[in-house]
Image (cartoon, helix red, strand yellow):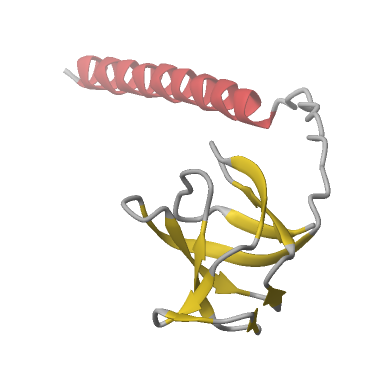
Length: 131
């Protein structure tokens, strides 16, 4: 009887050792995979074009009157040339009609929200550059 108990205990120890060895091998493989160094990815730098000074941002467009609302970041005057650039928009025009609260103005300062007659469709988020 005593021999059977000793044999069972010895068998249990062997089984435990096998389980421990298997589990440590798996975890070391996982750790080795995680710590393996990856090849550096080379990123190409995009060509940066300088359009001019950003003087405003389009906040709204009224298609029935072809007018855009612009939040100005700099001064703007009648007769100046501006460029509107966005994801699908890219055109240049001279400022011919400019309004604040439906009143015609000739000059606008930084911080004003103006209405500007545009020659093409613009979208919210397009940038306005002074040429």
